Amino acid sequence: MLKHALRSLKRSLTSGCPQFGRPATERVDCVVIGAGVVGIAVARELAMRGREVLVLESASTFGTGTSSRNSEVIHAGIYYPRHSLKAIFCARGRDLLYKYCSEHNIPHKQIGKLIVATSSSEIPKLNDIMSCGIQNGVPGLCVMEGSEAMRMEPELHCLKAILSPVTGIIDTHSLMLTLVGEAENKGATFSYNTTVIGGHLEENRICLHIAETKSLENWNGRSPSHPEMVLVPNLVVNSTGLSAPVLAKRFDGIHNAVIPPAYYARGCYFTLSKTKNPPFKHLIYPIPVEGGIGVHVTLDLDGQLKFGPDVEWIDGVDDISSFLNKFDYSVHANRAELFYQDIRKYYPNLKDDSLQPGYAGIRPKLSGPGQPPVDFVIQGEEIHGVSGLVNLFGIESPGLTSSLAIAEHVATRFL
Ligand SMILES: Cc1cc2nc3c(=O)[nH]c(=O)nc-3n(C[C@H](O)[C@H](O)[C@H](O)COP(=O)(O)OP(=O)(O)OC[C@H]3O[C@@H](n4cnc5c(N)ncnc54)[C@H](O)[C@@H]3O)c2cc1C
Image (cartoon, rainbow, N blue to C red; front, side):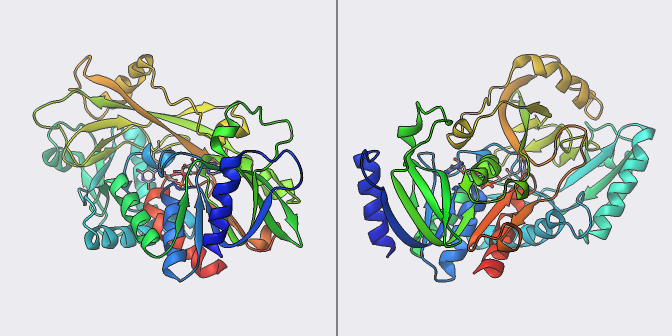
């Protein structure tokens, strides 16, 4: 069935938009929309459980969205409200990820992290973070005096710190490559340059409208579009990251009220110009700020040190630009000034002119500026009433850490 659907998909997409009549319609088993780390993990899990899986990705390869624009940190699960999906999936995902990395030789390192209070007014917040981490069952957490933390990290300034030994770093590209390989070995098929532009309901099933990405380049996104193909899956997982809410709104027949509003918060990174020895061995995190967990120190597996991400709310993103990942990812040098100020609170010896613009990522948020943080949202039929549709909304940090746990949950709950 899948092979036939794919042959047809390719024929339709290469022959362009049908001028007359209805587009080809095919039934398929499972469709995952979006090949970021979460979509890939879900596709692998479904394929491992013996299902036929087709992954539709608008870009020319996997992992070009948020999954390649993050801090690459395996989070411990400290900050999230107790019993939230973020807390549950982060803890489970962390354990699964360390095991998976070890078994598949994926570069990673459990280097540990320090969360630091740099003024006395931050100490109550640090204590709250510790309580939250303990309630979430994060192993090995310990509070230390500033002097002890500064002995571990001589370049650090702080009054008090929390050490989280189970936090680590990972090569995300290797992870995604391995997951894709495993999914393909189990029969999953990845169709790149393939965009889902919307859908409609027939007998309470979702029919996906598919177009070749190239054909959308000049489309204004508002006029009616002709799908080049329609797919009718048994199970659809909308794992389109930043696009997930806007895509769900294009599924005719779903009540708009169940689809959360999308907010976008850009985060920029600056890298430290090459030094012989990086100044820190651990990840260093300040007290979280609204919208993010603060401009922190991250090391990659080559020892390159970067600082970020900051928080900059952006709007005016239209649907099609979002499907085609046409976000503004530029890092303006003038943002460096704020970075110097923030970083010198915990790294006072940071030299002038030592920061270079790095890269940016965009957080797929469900709450806007001034609003309380919102949990991951995983929506099935019980919420939107459509058989076989699963929407993954607001998969921001710790989405990378949680990816294998989200996949396990989706497969267990919706198959
Ligand atoms: C600045 C920043 C730092 C972060 N740091 C960390 C961290 O250190 N640790 C951690 O655990 N998490 C972190 N995260 C979160 C993590 O990166 C994300 O949760 C994760 O990458 C989300 O993966 P995804 O597969 O859901 O989305 P994405 O990676 O965005 O993938 C979605 C895919 O869907 C495709 N797509 C979109 N629309 C369509 C369509 N209509 N049709 C077909 N395909 C479509 C896109 O091209 C894209 O490839 C961070 C996030 C940000 C922004």
